[in-house]
Length: 171
Image (cartoon, rainbow, N blue to C red; front, side):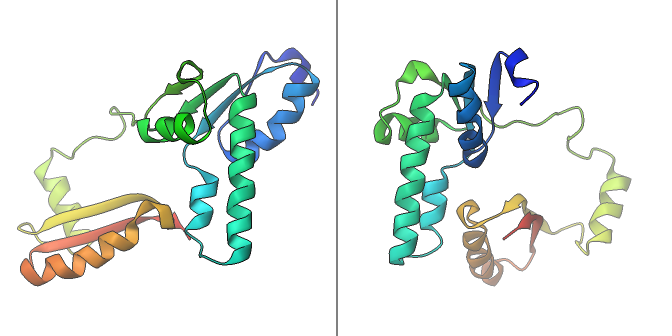
């Protein structure tokens, strides 16, 4: 808390962080920016339909709504989350800024060197004439990796030249 009085803005990148950030926001009257990459209440619903899970999802939704309303600015990574905030939390559109996820194209770019590409494909057991479908990211229920896996079995039955790569960490 020592640096907070000198700071002008508190930036919280997810729901649990914004809960902690609300304290100095109110105590020290600091501006609060809440970045929402996903809705914790909606993610909770994916964990099952039990009564306890329903209560947890409701409480998370109330917390998200409170945090969004108390924040000076809400940064949404998708237009869909922005629409959800306006429709379900009644946030003003001028309080929400959509800043979509991106990538540093200087660091991440297509492999143009055919020799390097061939070595990379061989290293993971992919032939030159095979088509690669890849998921790279956080492996969590809301990412839909299960849909990719289900689709892979159907698509492989129609085209055996397909290869699927799932790269990431998570649940």
